[in-house]
Image (cartoon, rainbow, N blue to C red; front, side):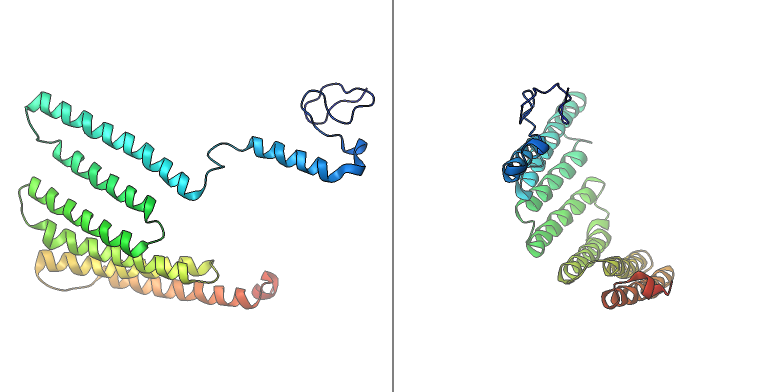
Length: 241
């Protein structure tokens, strides 16, 4: 007695398909291979989850809805607890403000996914407002404008530069790692310079120059290997092994 290769049920003697799962029997349907392939493709489509069938935009919208539910419910619960315990807005200002800015950035990322300049600009403004508000909440010492905004600007500028470099690259490989290392070095220099200006009123660079030099050397090597691999696709020939 023969058995179905898909579900293991016993087959009738002259059956061309499994009576339980509908699996076509290849050895008995050699004259209709196109139909068999169609049936198998239909079965594979059924195995895909509903999430896998969604487009990129639909996945981002789903993520936005879930994030909105979590963040808004968290904000609501936080406000209630603060009001009940303290009779007003005290410590809840911090998580509520952060949650709203985070929700705004997720929303922009959903609809402006391909517009990185517009998304980055509005995201920078909202994050800058967040830092200033956190500074005001904590006593308005001025660190939000004098330290937070410059550091935020340096971070957004370097990340935007990295995104543009990666998207303009025709072939992506080791060059992406090299670009990331270079932007990390540039960001390190910016961070040390901004912090020294804020704390000591002196533009001085020490450790960031070491990071930058290391990033330049490593990224140069990676870019060279990437260039050679584009010309010589055989790794054995490239590494002489």
